[in-house]
Image 1 (tube, helix red, strand yellow):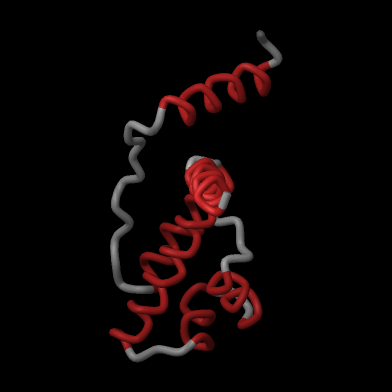
Image 2 (cartoon, rainbow, N blue to C red; image 1 turned 45 degrees about the vertical axis):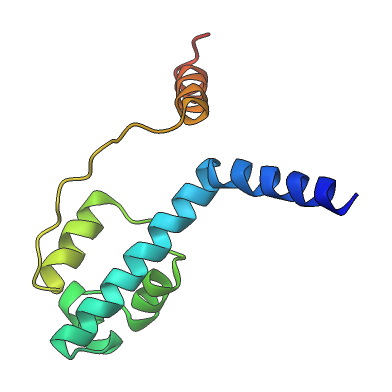
Amino acid sequence: MAADKLAKLKSLLEKDRLSQEYKRERIVLELGESIVKRMEELGINRAELAKRLGVSNPMVTKMLRGNANFTLRTLVGLAAALEQDLSPIEFVPGSLQARRFHVSTEHASMGTT
């Protein structure tokens, strides 16, 4: 009985890892960690980063908490404020399920079937 529950839990966790929400949150978390690490390397605080970006302190807090929806313009500006370049964002092969989800979502957003 316990082995069945464990197997079911593992299956649910694996399914979660394939979800778009999980992938999105993982990237947001990694981005926030990267920003904080670079701020520490430069010896700057949130107020200084806000000044460099030309935004409010609460906006920087929102970015670091993962509550901001970054545009490419914001990411390029953030990289400059952190004295870095932004590497190209690339698409990499994913699971078959992820590819199927993307294709069905793409068709839905275009109004095609």
